[in-house]
Length: 380
Ligand SMILES: [Zn+2]
Ligand SMILES: [Zn+2]
Image (cartoon, rainbow, N blue to C red; front, side, top):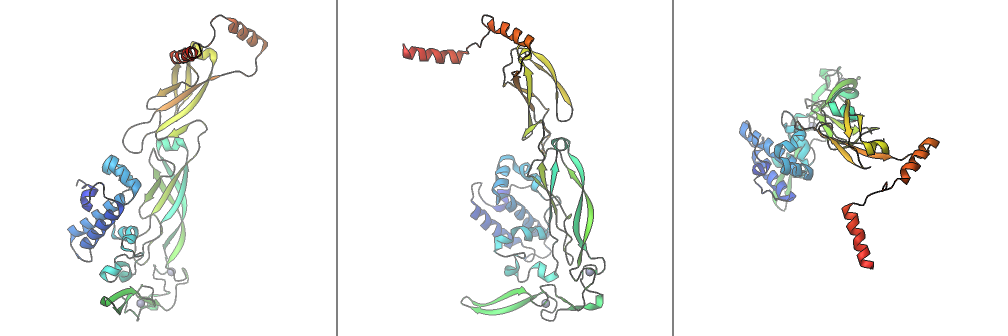
């Protein structure tokens, strides 16, 4: 299925400002909310489509990338497998001015409080990589302490199944209704049940393994597959690899922040690499063939005779692979002519001879000449 244009989805113009985009999303989210359209697959798809569009267009950086490159520009941020209802609740609570259950005030009782399900927390880690690893992509194993569902009580938090009772304050619904008289008339508001904190259950005797939390910390080894071309500060997320959810809620994500280690030889700019190569002035004057290191191997380069210090040579395709697409950056070699600081007797002799040669001095370039001539003209 081809993706629709995000602006089209939200029915806003390409120049719409943040407030307009937020309003447009809010309108669609209310219209297509599954609680208003139970069992309606089309509405659910529209609801998710709008959330995805809002996620990109409400973020200035993502919007800029989307404007420049279309869907491909924001693909790395997309959730593989699409949005779940919980993602949408987690991400866009602020649109509705609420917390974790943004729709509660609109539809009477959020999904969360009705089921008691809680999504697991995200785990954030930093992963330091060398440029070589970034160049090829890498598989890493990391140890994590992850909250898993308690194996003794299977997440209920109770010592035995007989220790779980339905909350009498809310009759197991997890929320309580209040009727209030306001200047707008009689209003019913639903809020989380204070007795059971929205779980709908009361636990008489808590599980000793997890002290009633329903979760236990487990050390686990996770395999991370890092694609080639990632950048410092980039965040990759692995769905469902975070802490376990509670009461049937889905697990959080594992969010990996990439840290690029400094390389002793190469500097990086996007997918291009830069290095310096020192040669002596005999080599610069006569020309020379050199073997230089590249990120994965080495390359032979020819430095032409008469090369000036500071000359930049470009080795096409010897940079990094770009994260998206199939292009490769280039390797730039900056040639620096080395000037000796200590001379042997023989070297000094030769250089003195060379220095006395007629015409062995810098030639003025055309620009310099005209510049000096202009000054001369000015003073005569
Ligand atoms: Zn337990
Ligand atoms: Zn209750």
